[in-house]
Length: 80
Image (cartoon, rainbow, N blue to C red; front, side, top):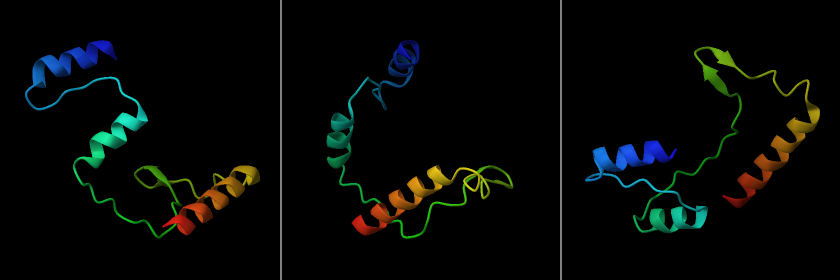
């Protein structure tokens, strides 16, 4: 990671400055640019990781994970 950061800062330092950061520093930097985030109203499923390869049956054999996704989705939709 250090080598990549050094390379990008040396080669593209006029446009970008890469550094190690914390989540709070990232949020502060993004908030300075008045970014408007899109609101998501639909569910996140089904996922697709390549071409026509969908994960529609992935959680059918993992009911505990499916419940976690359901609860997280409900909380997400309730907060937006």
